[in-house]
Image (cartoon, rainbow, N blue to C red; front, side):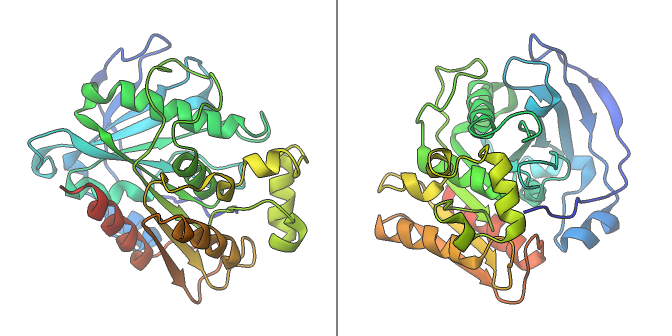
Length: 310
């Protein structure tokens, strides 16, 4: 579930500092990314940096832990085309729940369509086991919904897009709805429910892990669950919570994935379909685990636009 980190040359021009939380003041920057470098890695267009503002390192759980922070990317200038609050897509990185960070969310391609993007860190398995990671994601959604008015975000149009381990967490957000999973952070009066999920090659079922996961994924999942596949494994499996109330899903998986087998997304797809959920499964036949390509990125952006562009 580890995937290569996106790398690009970044030049950030400081615009000022807003005291948005009681913990510390996040940095407000003008985003500038070298176009060719970023586009070469993702194979997908990214926004004109002169029309994007990023607010970095915002604490969302009432702590000073850098693993409980998020970045917000906001459209401005020609990209700010909506006369009303804009939809938000929250990006959740992968890395086997043990590594990775919030840098360079693939969802940035939606900025050009007038979307806001948030990308979050969450506690990794070196510091905590499940359900800490889901607690953090829920705390981040509550914080974003509670502060939506500060960023002209529509609190009723929040989607999540996750890769690998992040896909598992995104799917858990989508299937558990507003179910309380912890008490981290403030804003507990706000819902952690999301309205759409895009899950790229995330594990969906930890039952019979030795039959359903590769040795690498099994080791990562064991650390994630503290070795408790029987009890925590069920709670960390999105298939456990599927119901007719589950939000729309797009599942994307490589047909040649030997880390998290395609059967994981197929099983979740079948469960969602049987429950009457609006769900699609896009199979990339030759792709292995951790891929990022233009077709999948475009399909993901089209999915969110089909749900949120009203």
